[in-house]
Image (cartoon, rainbow, N blue to C red; front, side):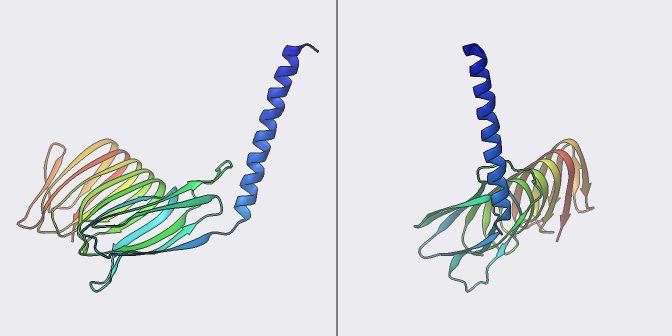
Length: 238
């Protein structure tokens, strides 16, 4: 056996070992039950908040805290056995909160293995909200919050967003999935839908001009861009 053949055999053997270790790691992590991490960040002297959420695969709900709450964000994050949660908190008048789950070492074969993120945020704290998810079911009830901007990106899944009763700008991007947007009935809103293989369902409250859908109320100014490659976009009011 020459040196070239020995090198090839060595590479193949090493590859088999790495794959085997990955599968063993995955099996070990799958056996570990999900854990629940409690989030409780006080508002302190914060005058504005940046909230960045990045679950890998989850069912996420976000809503407003009671008016008398002293917290900026509370709730529970369920972390799977194959996941690791990272948390970043930058305190101060410009509060910054970032939460992200990542897959640990191993081959992730079940992208539908979802875990729950159940969070509530301060209702009167001006907030820039970002949500980035690979596979998710997200329900964002922003009606009683002071969210000023939204950047929602989802690879696969369904997102339902109740928009706030305040002036608001945002972008919603979905590769494959459904997007349900529910706006205040009195909003002065412009929704631009950039669609690929997408169907659009719109209530009678809206008027349409090309890719734009409008509400002509006397309430909050809302500007939103929706980019959906494949799925459904639904627009309605509350």
